[in-house]
Image 1 (cartoon, rainbow, N blue to C red):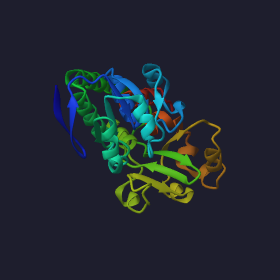
Image 2 (image 1 turned 135 degrees about the vertical axis):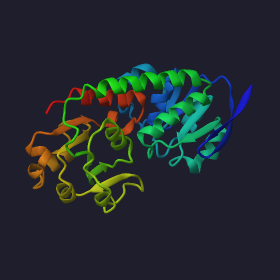
Image 3 (image 1 turned 90 degrees about the vertical axis):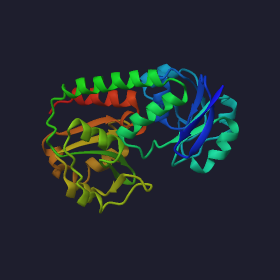
Image 4 (image 1 turned 180 degrees about the vertical axis):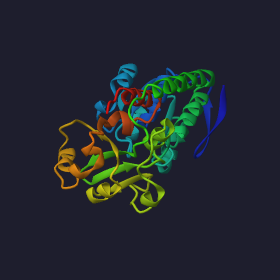
Length: 285
């Protein structure tokens, strides 16, 4: 038996019983793990360490199907999934080729905010005939988020900015991104108002904003959440040795928090956000 399923770029005929899938974005890996679907392949950017430990342990063995931007068709085919889940923005132009391999559904992930990601999770639950399980998982997720939010001790009224540091400079997460929207939901005051954000160039035509060190200094957040691979990151060291770093309000007042980039910036799912808020609940001024 099959049924028609509507997703972001069309309608796909899906089997009623789906047991395996390939995920072309990390947020979909998170969702499939939560729904107990066997993940045959992942676009892991050719690096399994991109998966955080709780996710990797649940997934077990899988086929790497290349990068999220340019997944490898032959690797996907070799994984033999019943379903392929891809990003509506990144994979729209290869949707037909993917559909020739297995039924394919696309949702926004890279550009999706926190609330949209919850809605996508429920839709994925429907796609794999697990609507009830998806709703139950969402309910438990919301309870957990509320419980941890009540445990956060750091001052949410301090203007907060979450950033990724790279060789290009600073990439800020606006309130339209997953991390930015999540922080807003938790009650953190946003350091990037619309007037400032509108003047900053977008990263890859997304809601992520590119900033120079000078622009970061002009925003001058009271709290800075820095997403890094490790504390000895070369690009981070460059920022910390810049003329602007020591003058930042967040630096002067010891309100700079270093967090796991994979967990915060890449996964964008239930498990990741639960780890994120646990981290926030354990932060001290």
